[in-house]
Amino acid sequence: MLLNENPDILSYDSTGYSMYPALKPGDQLIVKPVQDYCKGDIVVFTHGGRSVTHRFIERNGDILTFLGDRLIYSEKVHVSQVTGKVML
Image 1 (cartoon, one colour):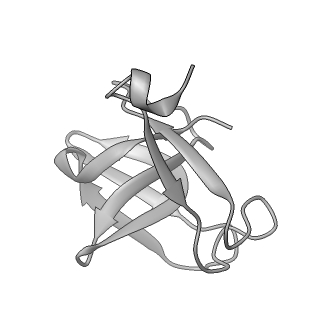
Image 2 (spheres, one colour):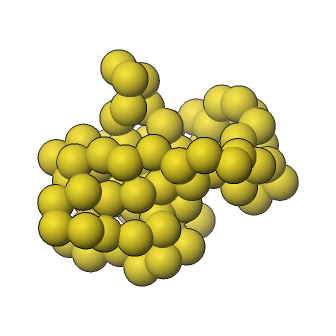
């Protein structure tokens, strides 16, 4: 299926090294909004005014916690800031 045939599927280019080696700068990411996430899912969300791609760690109500593979600190974001799951 082509991306433009389904408006719910988005395309992003990976930037940075926080998810290396799973994702490398320039990798094309296919992202689909989903209702639930499993621990370890790679998810795109908005944090600090930019799109971020990290792994889902846990959910506490409407707050989701994410962590990059090469990072030691996590981000907590509201569920409304989540774009969707990376569909590799």
